[in-house]
Amino acid sequence: MDAAVEILNPGLAATIQDSGRWGYQRYGVSVSGAIDQFALHLANVLVGNKSDQAAIEFILLGPKLKFNCPTFIALTGGNCQAYLNQQEIASNRAYQVFPGDILSFDPMKNGRFGYVAFAGGIKTTAVLASRSTTSRIRLGGLNGATLTAGDFLPLSPVYRLNSLKQRYCQLPPLPAKTNLRFIRGPQWDSFSVSAQKLFCQQHFQVSNQADRMGYRLTGVKLPVPTQSMLSEGTVTGSVQVTRSGQPIVLLADRQTAGGYPVIATICAVDLPRLVQLSSQQTFGFTEISISQATELLRQQHAFLHQLQQRFYQQRYQLPLGPQQAAGQRISQLFKH
View 1 (cartoon, rainbow, N blue to C red):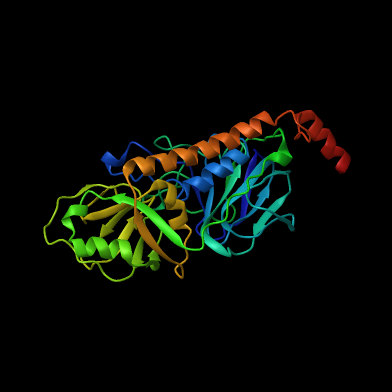
View 2 (spheres, rainbow, N blue to C red):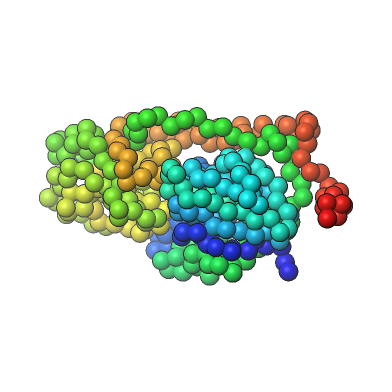
């Protein structure tokens, strides 16, 4: 059998996702990709991958996996307890796994989306330069669909990951109150002053109509512009306001064009916080400038880059990770 991980139980809506299928929106192809890009990038950094490698994304309940090759894994995203061979393991840390090992999850306690990254990434065939799954049009991933029991995801055996025990990232706790930063959308001036104030001053919740395409928000309905507009290209994080006055935040699997007025665009650095919110949590919006939004995103990228550099600089510090493939095989022979 080729090196792979077997899906024993798919959990809920598990798919293969990477950083997305960029450059094809003009042909009507959604970008897709991980809905929580920060969590995907962090998982990849922890296992020594480039930030855009493909991983498993799941919603609320993670998959049960069986490995038939040695590799390294990292779990990120929403808060859920995971087990490797029935032993508890932590999120945001790299672990080595061996053939026969089984990974499983409890249901998620906080958040919505979780990720499992593998050293070297998942080796399914790329479609339009991406391995991301767009299940709505059955594109990419594994047969363009959510994962099912009995699927095998191809991997490359990986025996070496230096400085294994240092590969851990402790993230700062999230603030008690969630305030998402935004920049004005292209139709901001089409909304009345009262609508603009209402958008900035009230609190919203994510409704039950929430998926990878977008989150419909609940709150006091916004007055909508009376003038019609032509459809235009969409951007991740754009806040469209429907004719009913309910905002919809466009996400990874969004349509490529839309005709509702966009009052705001949520800053990319805050999108991971939005997508992980439950329907019980309330949040508000705070306006910032484009330069501030750009600087915040630069800081987030710098954090991941510095983490990657730290792991690289620790490659010769004790305790070192497993080094040689032959040594790993001999070690396994003695164990059995």
